[in-house]
Each structure stands twice: as C-alpha cells, then as structure tokens.
Image (cartoon, rainbow, N blue to C red; front, side, top):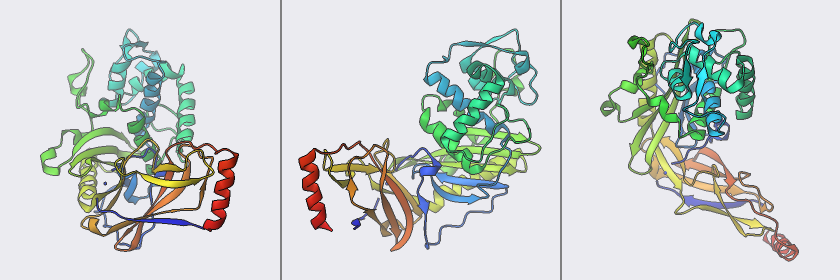
Length: 400
C-alpha cells in the first residue's frame, strides 16, 4: 500500500549539492522556451531550487574544458586547506615546470616562494597555468600524482564523463568533460567550500612586480551593471583554447522577497568570442530569472514529516537534502497560485539512515505534473525494541 499526503502550496528556497540529486522534470506543462544561445552546449540550473534544470543543449556532449579544468584544481586545493594539509599563509616553491608553463600566467619563477593564498588568486583571477602547476605539486607532490587525484575526485563526485590529463586545461588528447559534469563540480565547489568561494568574485589581482595588464579577471560579468539586471554575478570561471572555444561557468544571485536570495548557475561551452561568452551568459541568466519564479514548498517552520514503523521514534523529518531546511521549486512565472504538492511513499520501516531516500514529493502546476523531487531522511532512526516492533507489525497488518 502507498500513503499519500496532499498539501496546497503557495509560496519557497533550497540548495542541494549535486546535479545527480536534483529534481527531475516529468511535465506536460509547456516550459518557457529559452532564447537562442550561441554556444555548442549549455546548461542553466536554479541552484536554490535544488539544482533544477531550467534549460539545456547538448549537456552530455563531451567537450574540452580549457581553463574550466581549474575548478577541479581549486577544489582539491580547497580540500587541502580544509583538512589542514595546506594553510593560506604557507609558501610553496615554484618549479621550473611551473615557470615554463605556456598560456595564461601569473608570472612566478623558481626564485620565488609563493603564498598558497596568492597562488589561489592567481589561479582564479588570472587563470594562471603556472599557479595551477605550483598548486598541483604542492597538493599532490607531482603533477602526475595530482592529476590522479583529480580523476579520483571526479569519480567520487559522480562526474561520469570527465577525464583529466593536466591541472591547467591546455589541449591534450583525452582531456574532456561535459556541461552536466561541470555543473556537478561547480555546485559542489560552492557548497563544500563557502569559506573560499569568495575568491571567484575578485575583479583584480596581481603579484607586485608582475605586469599591470595581467591583473583583471576575464569574467566580464563581474563588472556588469547589476542595477539593469537585478542580479549580481559572483563567479565562477572562464576558459579558452582554439579547440574548446570560449567557455564559461557563471553564477549569479538575486534578492527575493520570499526566500531572501535566489542563485542560478549557467555553463556555456564553445562560444565564438570573449564578448559573445559574456553576452550569451548574461542573456541566459536574465531569461532564467524572468521566465521562472520560486515557490517555497516547505521550511523549518513547517517541516515535512513521515510516519516510521518499527522505529525507536515514530516520525522522521524529510528534505531534498539532510543539510537543508527549505524546499523550493522553480515554476513558469505567473503560475505560483496553481501549485500543489503531494508526498508519495510506501510504508517507511526502520532502521533508517540519514540521507536515505524514502519518499518523493510530486509537484503539479494547474493539476499537471511538473517535478518529482526525491526526499531523504534527515535523521537516523534505529529499530525499536521487540515490543515496539511487534506492536507496529500488528498495526501495519490492519492499516493495509
């Protein structure tokens, strides 16, 4: 037997950390059509709505990531900081290999010992290939060892179509990813390292004595007039090679009267120029904010709960992620008053583990299916004692 709980919902926010855990669209409702985007592949996510996909094109097509590779290089460096393997003030040597790197650089050389924080700024703001190698050697011992770590982390994060050959993103056979995998990486980067993600909003950086002409972040949307769009861009990374074209992972936030802040993430791969990259990225973000609005389904003030049979406790709270207390969905603008939601679950029997998927929330718009969102247990629930298990077993027999 299945149990159904129906609720009418009128208002919304949530941030999940993986595209693989995002809500899946199953909808006869006509979704808003995105504008024409001049890119080989793109993907637009509403991060606040649990990484809900708003628009995509060729999201699983293998592509060369160029300097978007450095998102993974930063991920592993941030992880080393979090685990105390490195500190921001620690100084790392500059190898001849790092010094001789081609392409974009922060201009470090073997006579220098460079602070980890400065290497991170050089990696993120200046897209320094030399900084990428210096960090790789500092974290992994060797570049080859670090690349092995990159591939292991990609697999652990669920980036099934990504393979790295270097930490900087120069063209090498077999070095590839997809827009979908980049979205997984970008959302995890933002969620796993909130103390360090602010580096991606920096507009300028250079070491003293290095060329002043090399101090500006290539993410042009960091400099855009937010008064015209209503949103603020605060990351993440650009990339370019001849083979990859001009690539972009860009995120923005906008104030919202109901939920406080709404975040979108766009991935654009293979645009024609630096200007086109910025223009197409802004176009996609503007469309996402205007074509969809948020509906808050549940929050900590009125949490989702479900009956647990044969458990040490009789109820468990649910969410799309055990670390988030608010659940929201993005719907076509103007339809927020027509949203309903229904929890669907088979009988939930202990023991349960925190994070275990035990139900799903079916969201409808105007009576038509719109999203199905997996719901996880927010707590562990141990088995009850013999008497409690026996009593619940009897009750379950008569509840069918």
